[in-house]
Image (tube, rainbow, N blue to C red; front, top):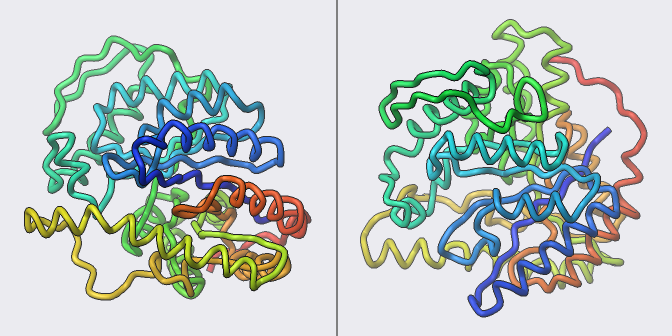
Length: 355
């Protein structure tokens, strides 16, 4: 069956309202736990107000303490901004606090916001290589009961043993982000599930077909391919209201304001410093409401989810609170989704076969 989760990615434009928005986030986490949402995904962004709680590791501890059943995932921890041993320790502690409710989503860090690297004193050109080295260190830390040494380009380590040991064995559940087709195919060849960023349904279907084919071509059997598809997630922005007209009235302005705010500091830095990490020659799917926003009545949203289900992916990461949308509006949308949309997908679906 298609599984559903919430991407808690709250904007705070006014620093004086940060505490209020963070409190709203805890309330939203509790609501999702109450309604049976499977995973609450947390983001990591710095300095711009695009993610009010900023530090998902610290915030995850608060969510785990405030909830009983919901899993807490990272979408993603910006690994290139962290010391890998510190991050491994923190994830292991969270895994113990949640008794296995943690999903360690890893990624290199933003591909757009150069100021996040500047603020941490890390050259953005090193992001990918830092991520790759750090991921290996974290996996060794979790699975080396006698300790280990590491000599790499960015870290030289002699670790006696990681404490606390992870609750989940052999290590906390790990999933990687893939924002590009090549990134998805790289993970396919490793036989790993992945998190996909916002794309149109057409791009999603094509990419997942290539992903399945690449995994099969790398020698993984049909059962493994099906398992990885079931453990992979795609992201969509979602607004549910009683009617299509009401959902569009609420959702489209909030979505457009969110995209404008997310670009604001990036463009200011470019104007001031002449530095840009990735030049977009055409508007990407994530900023096009026709591709990146599902807004409608429960029946309309259910039809859209059925189209996603047809791609064979296991889960949808739904981002409900968009931009300046008030918390109570997002809460109504979440409740409508879980009460009137999600139950339509509760019956087991047929297994996916590898292409």
